[in-house]
Image (cartoon, rainbow, N blue to C red; front, side):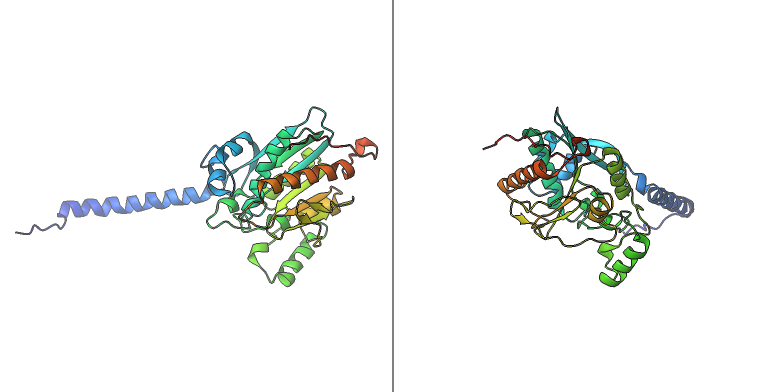
Length: 307
């Protein structure tokens, strides 16, 4: 005999009352989560958990040795922006290094983390400040995205002169409204670009090194003679763009900006090549990066041979 599994009248009445209440609770939770999305806490308090799982050529010991520190900066989705300062006892030059401004350029964040190790190993008179992943939301997206969680290209969001006119024209006419290059509704509309802008004001770097991929060249904007090469990357100045960091920092603010375009967005150069790029950067800095307080005289960057 097959039992009838239909609900009793009492069970049906109970379901009629409970189910709408449950649905209302679920909708309320979803609405609350959506409203709080931009302020949600980090999924992992240790940034290396995500970095090691996501970045190429990144091992847990190397990431841990970077000793990344949380900043006041947050991404659109609430991820903490991390940095690391490496300061020589006789530091005279301030250098700001940023990676993963574009989230789909994974290798750029990895190289920045590798270079933190180089900065600790190579004595110099430099105060280094590393921000290895300015766009963690794009970096951790699946698949990774160039833009941030608001769909803004952070490297078109800086306040260059005539941005309101030029950025719109460039995006509409030159990129054909490419969504990967949308400059945003206004300058510094994004928490990530606003944080970096504020960091430039706080830190007042003598040099900015911005790591990108995958064009395999070296770009430069600023008032001094650019480096001819870093490792296998040769100088090939590609011009300036409305809202770009090179335009804002190098041209408008007079802070030299070295833009490194790695050959691949998903693979880092070999360790020996990353080391050579680092040494070439230090040599060029010793000749061309001149702080105002130095009275126009270059300050030699002290290095030790590492083999």
